Length: 87
Image (cartoon, rainbow, N blue to C red):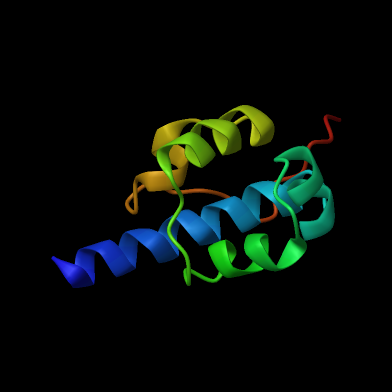
């Protein structure tokens, strides 16, 4: 059970980082939008060192514009460097 929880924490953190970077935001930008006191908290979450509370997850979903499945489904294929440009 602990291994699953650690894996999920890493997946969530990595997906938060990917969503943040796809918007061109820094950790400071995201911390401010999320009303989190400092960038280090975002860094710790993104590295999988801190779990995200349910309330924080709702705010990440809203702020980053992604679904719950995007953040929590380890089998979901996501494009890391997705371009927002349309030709």
